[in-house]
Image 1 (spheres, rainbow, N blue to C red):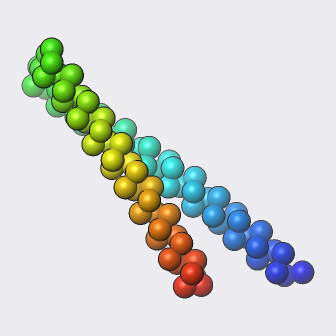
Image 2 (tube, helix red, strand yellow):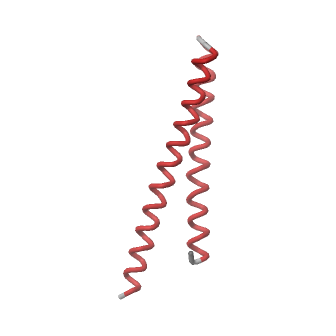
Image 3 (spheres, rainbow, N blue to C red):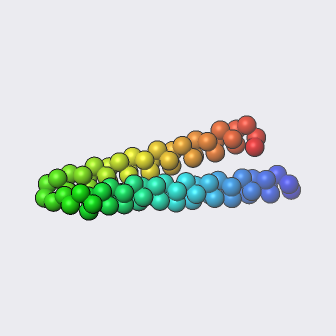
Length: 84
């Protein structure tokens, strides 16, 4: 009977870790884009320069978000295999 509880706890832990990684990666991507947007506003860029910097910021934010997502999930998987 305890085996069922353990598997349930493991599933719950996995769910929490997935949600944590999704939320933190979205926040990281949003913060990076916000910093780039603030930089564009501070430098008073316009036209194609503004668009290029914003697209670069969006790409940088997306890459950082995916990096965070993968990093958290891989760390969780490694800890789970070690039995923690």
